[in-house]
Length: 346
View 1: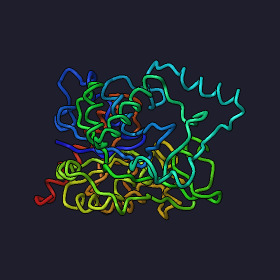
View 2: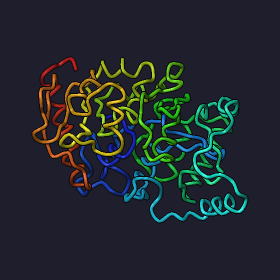
View 3: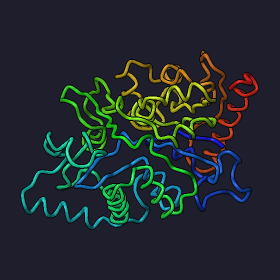
View 4: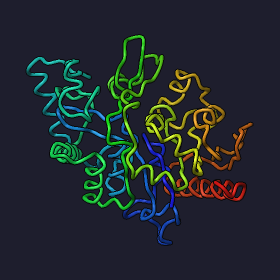
């Protein structure tokens, strides 16, 4: 059994070949087979858009597990149509309505659905492109929550519906919003990254609501197994998970291996380098060790072992398909074994 902390696209790429319909003929890779894998997903990126709860990092895992993910973009459903999205833009144009990220009024940010706090956007000319089948998932999720289900329960129902075999768990059933502070003001991560294409300078990152949030019992149980932190952005993909009280303490009590998101000094994907600098850390594998002080070992790119305070396993960590993903997962399993052999108590 292995538990994986996941956010963004880096970790789903690591998991290629473990989902429904994509396990190799040998039946998977033991702890990394879909039937024994638990994935704890970041929900700091979640927003309410036009009244619908959108959980991007959960959805990528759901669509990957159901083998319908658009692997060109690592977002949405392959071959999806976008008629509703196109109609929204047509209506906005005809009515002379503004386009781009538009927050609901400040007083509305803490009204309505508790899970939608601090991240409620208008659906007028929606700034995130959502496909029609993709939208059906958001409608179902929102309806389940509105009738009293938790995000964990709604995710389980959706996972069964799409045929995902791995257990996918939200990091919390409580609202946590990743807020990026810039010279132009504070903005939700989705406005910064999608709406503004990562252009504003980042001064700090806040995980709003995390102090009042709690991990579910299911998440805490999952964290008693060996944990692999995938090559996701340490700040905005993994950072929200770590901000939930009790998670860091749980990780300090189990075996933790992290896969570096840095290739030859460059970030694996996304704005990891800028965000690492903004939060006072070097955007390198050495900086990763500072971000994850509870890590027992690190999988690094060949020749990037450096002077880390924990054991490293070197491999080519570039992932461009299932064979690459399998290679890096095998390196992570070797790292877990090294930790176990070196310390019988971990």
